[in-house]
Structure formats: structure tokens, C-alpha cells
Image (cartoon, rainbow, N blue to C red; front, side, top):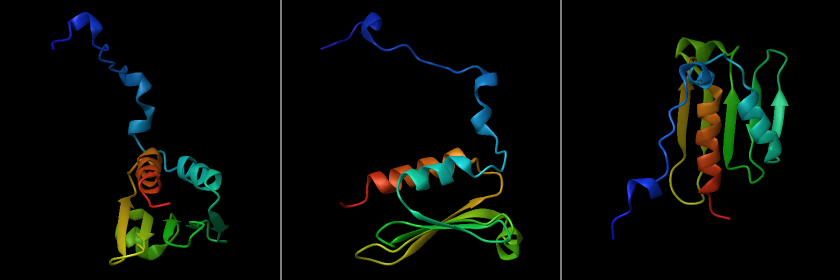
Length: 115
């Protein structure tokens, strides 16, 4: 069965000015708002770092803008996962990674976790 071109969805290409999310502004709001909405425990430190833990305690997300060890390695986000079965793993995101990208990663992680 062949679909005519008129039945296919149009390809959407946002204008360059609509792609503000492609460059990092070092704002953690997209991730922190998501974690808050998911009911995660969120703790701010006096140094302006933020630590969040999933309700089941298996996932940790750190926003580490003032952590010297993180900056030395050029990271600002750390996601650490302890699966029910298997080895723990870590994903880190660099200082220039847009927070929307990290939020998308976490959204996918949570969407595919067993309930």
C-alpha cells in the first residue's frame, strides 16, 4: 500500500531563532521542575549544588555547578542509577549540555523504568 504525498505529515523545520534550546544557558530549571513534578526528594546545598533522589531511591540526579571535582572533569550533571538487577551505572553531562537534553534523558529513563 502506497501513501500519496498529500497524506503524509509535513516536515517541520523550526527557524533558527526558534532553536534557543540548542545552546545551554546553564539554567537547571527544566530538570529541577521535572524532578519536582515527579515527586523526587530535592535538596539544595549552601554551595548552590542540588541533589535529587527518585521516590524509590534507585536514581540520583546531581546538578553540580559549584562542585570542584565536577568542574575539573567538565561536567555539571550526574545521573546515577541502581537497577533492581544488574550493576549500577552513571551518566554525566558536560557544562555545555542544555538542561532540556538532560530532562529528556531523565524523562526517557523514568518512562522505561519498571512499575
